[in-house]
Length: 183
Length: 183
DNA sequence: TGATTTGTGGATCAATTTATGCGATTATCT
DNA sequence: AGATAATCGCATAAATTGATCCACAAATCA
Image (tube, rainbow over the protein chains, first blue to last red):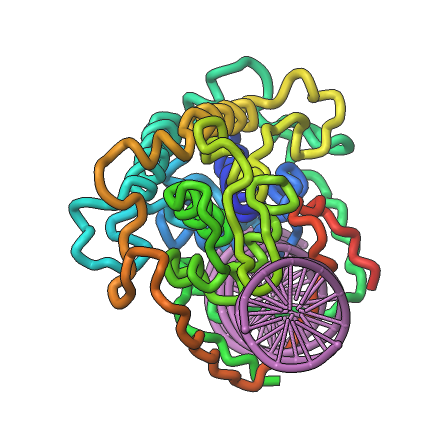
């Protein structure tokens, strides 16, 4: 239902919200949320561009929440990654159908609207407060509480892999442009 | 929200349901639904494996609906393509959380449940009967009626790229996303 | 100051999804 | 039977998404 990346973003935001404004390194976040190491940084940067988190470099750097968790909803977070858009015009290309989608797409659009309403009604805080205890299932080998003094982060095991990079990740909006693979 | 392929499947099923059991060639279907030529066949075959449509070869071959449009829902169709599954266990890997998902995933799961209910409540017939007129927006340059004589499908422009090959597309079920990379 | 830590941002690789091509097979018509 | 029309099904290509690496910039601490 949600893309993998959107799931990651939600986990990260919930985790940061639970940290109560405290700053955490990307590695701490990665471990707690089980989002793959370097990819955590990418997601954090996307969230940062939208002003949801703030990164600080340097020795005691890290990321912290930069928004009001009482205001920000799951929909807001998902929208950073892959915007959930209403169907405004007929996917079959009939331009005159803007105000009168064909029945099938009208139904699908209704479903999307409902989804937006539902996700848009769930704030980070409400999710966290909804049930006692930690909001994310704790990873099996790591302490749950964020307050633990930032202790020696276990080095991520570097496992000699290939490197891949991405096209120009400034905006995650679906890039129309055809990436011509030069290689 | 829906994958491209799921959208295609819905268009095709609605179109066939409107044809009232009549048999249509894949090309006719492709034109009417604007699903890319050969891909139409692929989607039809997936639908066929689940018993929703039936294909006939030979000179007067084609595809027709092989289910009761009053019973089959949009959810059924979507499930053929990419199953909308409830979250049954914590994505963070905590195995003991089966019966008690962490709050975030409980919420997400609720959303999925709602989605299922909604899509599962919309039968093909109900969508078609919901509004008078054709259920799919008619393509701009082609007659709505399926009877249009089949015309040459446009060739795609080949543009020298890299090729990556695929896993073995027999089942479209999402393949467990944590693939341990052996490399 | 200089070493270390941590984020920034771009480049590249890998996996998945979407789309096409083509030969073989099957049914129908004459 | 033979020609033809259409699906079947596999192989491949292209596009998108997920993940990793690396050089560098900035902040901190000794």
